[in-house]
Image (cartoon, rainbow, N blue to C red):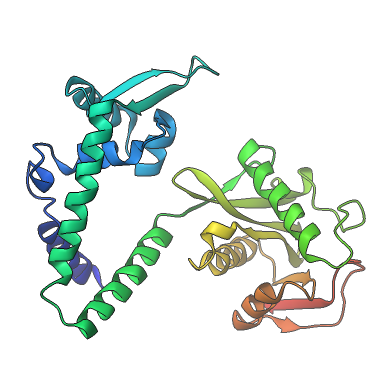
Length: 290
């Protein structure tokens, strides 16, 4: 369902923005090279981050960079801090070319808007914003990971830091009911991590209790990734994992200051229940039958 519409949209967009031409924006290069040039930016970018940001494999990025180096627009050199890291930087000609690309891109955007009346422009810009947000959401990956991985630890530490900022009396993890690495490792439990362009942007965890309800723990979404529906997606994936493990229900507790989380749980079918544990930071206890 919807596949034909997505394909039609892709055809219209690639034609309208000039992606079909070998010389994008009349600069003598295809769109891929120009996008890499623009993405490197005035401050440079390490090649690994460049690959992740554009979701391209290393071989293809290397070929694009070599083409730009041959044209005298880019140089790639080892990082001063770590010789294993390669940094792509724009040359003086590359900076000048990036400025031209910005100007030509503005002209292209204006040519798209110019034939439309004011009402149509507002509709198009709003629709583009919505499409960009939804396409970004579709690029998020959610995978079960070892909670000991550095990226997973980053998510968990970010979760603790946010609780410390939002709770009236702060947050001391030693006082809270535990969900340590061992408890979030199969078969005791699991940790899901969400990534966007290979960067961690969210997490959620389960603690299994045999045939009793599973506990949802450590629900967190990065500030920059909010508005993508990621919290609901993580919640849905946790419910599926709990059901697959044989849990009859899922339970969670939360603090009254986490109003967005409370609204999410209630809209997802979670019911208020009497306290089922002694979590000192909890004001609400929820359960959902699976």
